[in-house]
Image 1 (cartoon, rainbow, N blue to C red):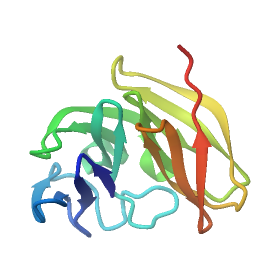
Image 2 (image 1 turned 30 degrees about the vertical axis):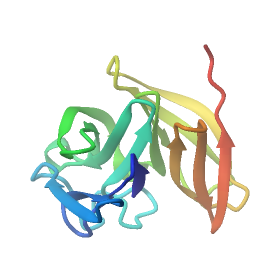
Image 3 (image 1 turned 120 degrees about the vertical axis):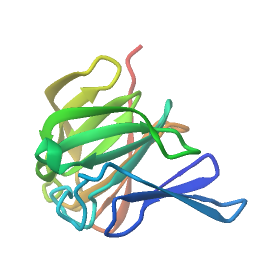
Length: 177
């Protein structure tokens, strides 16, 4: 679930439907992802935790991260129209979602971590949606409590937030110009 422009965006449990709840108007709107979208905890990250469909927000807008049976479980990422919930673009990566600890988007680049139960997690993969270039990388993330998950980037303060075994953690992001 993410908050963006006065609305909450979430996955309707055990379905391929995504939803928007407008906080001011107290109204919901639903829209389905592709019929081959994997749900019911079969398309989740390493941690499971019903993370089949994940949302992200960056400077450019709203994203949904998911996987489909037609792509053999690799990560798909779609840029969403925040009002209609329809994808404007979709990219298919080459990495299996079930082998990633978490994913988040910064500056239109999908970043994935290698685990969630280690002292030092790694950002081990990225996919640039502007160029469709993907690569493996090695950027350590300290995990003080050995269970980092639910990482989300906040474009307003340019920090990465997450949970580490019940503790809120905040990571400062340094950008190169």
